[in-house]
Length: 84
Image 1 (tube, rainbow, N blue to C red):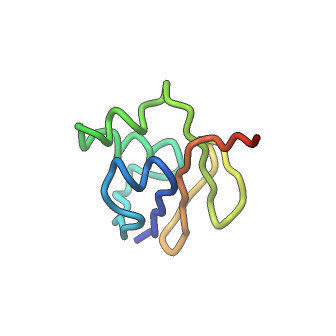
Image 2 (cartoon, rainbow, N blue to C red):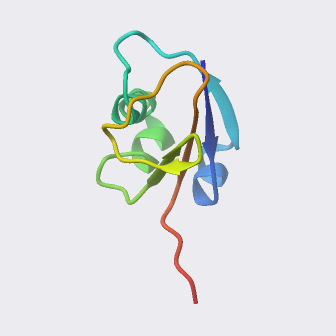
């Protein structure tokens, strides 16, 4: 299981701030997890689509799609932050 955290707009649209996700053997990296979540359809498909600007962190370190993930990891998804 990995802990998946959702921040800002994602938390609001997806209706949850976190969840525990069991990783199938086929999901070995961040991009695989994102694709698995997109496959849920609906808001998941819309908000986490590859064309959407969503940042990610694995174990509190910024990560790109090819970063490996495994049981016990914490993965966070959040929209880009802009300041003003």
